Every structure is written in structure tokens, then in C-alpha cells.
Length: 58
Image 1 (tube, rainbow, N blue to C red):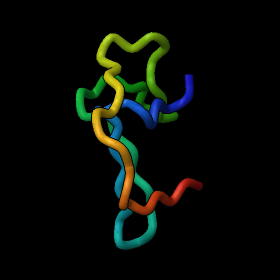
Image 2: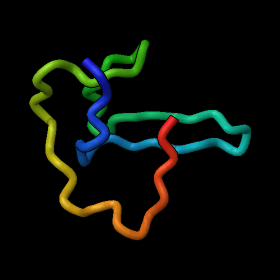
Image 3: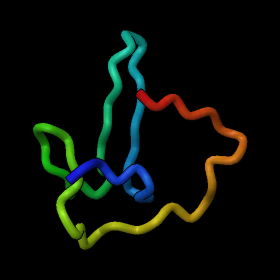
Image 4: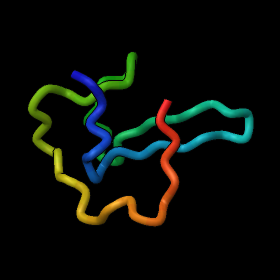
């Protein structure tokens, strides 16, 4: 399963060295490679939009 970037528990950060770190705030993800489990019980859609924010998708 791919990463559910539309989940409110998904978080991504970029370190000063440019490495992108993805994480699940409830730690329900598969570790290597980072992926959300099929039919995750913790999935919740984001409650706000990304309006006004810049997104850098690779």
C-alpha cells in the first residue's frame, strides 16, 4: 500500500541535510519501506486543507 498523505496522522519533515523523514503519528505504518497498512484502522481524513501552504512533492 502506498503512503496515505491524506491521513491526519501522516507527517513529513525535511532535515537540514535535505533528507525527507516520513512518519505516522500513531506508529501504525510499516517501517521499511515506509508504507501505510491496507485498510488501516487509524486512518482519518485531514480536517483542514493545505490552502496557503506550499507542498513539495517528489
